[in-house]
Every structure is written in C-alpha cells, then in structure tokens.
Length: 111
Image (cartoon, rainbow, N blue to C red; front, side, top):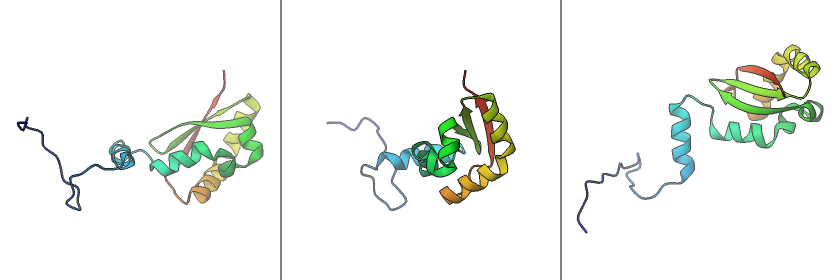
C-alpha cells in the first residue's frame, strides 16, 4: 500500500506507536491552560471529599476554566454562604487536591 503522506510525530522517548488517550487529553488541557485532568476528575468525582458533606449536599462543581471553579448551589442562601467562605473553600480544595490550580470560585444559583 502506498504511503499517502502520513507523518507520525515521535514522542520524546523516540517511540511512534499508539499512546494512551489521557496523554493527548493532558496535552490539550495544558494547551488550553486548563487544570490537570486528575484535578478536574477529582473535583467532579469526589466533591464531598473536597468540601465536606454539608456543602456538597447543597452544591456541585459545574466547570473549571482559567483557574476558576464554577459551583452551582441549590438556594440563594447557599450562594451567600459560599461567597463568604471562598478563601476557606479554596484552602480546602487546594489541600484535598494537593494542587493550587484552582485560584478563584464563581457561584451560580440553580434555576
């Protein structure tokens, strides 16, 4: 079969074979200046572990962009509460994730 001009880029280790998909996702995330895949995955899969049971009962993460974690809350009172707790939440999340990639929090009320 003739070569149709396909070019494969070798990895830094010199290999040109298949790569795990998470390597590609990680590269795209870095290019977009997004947090590490493991950070985002942990935020979404273990929200209660990050912020505690009470807060997790009334909120959920809905997005991460440019270091800002977007949180949705179920009532306006919780939006106010979390706004007052922003520094504490950032410290909890940073400690739990062992990462300082989340630097701001944005709070939205569920409609």
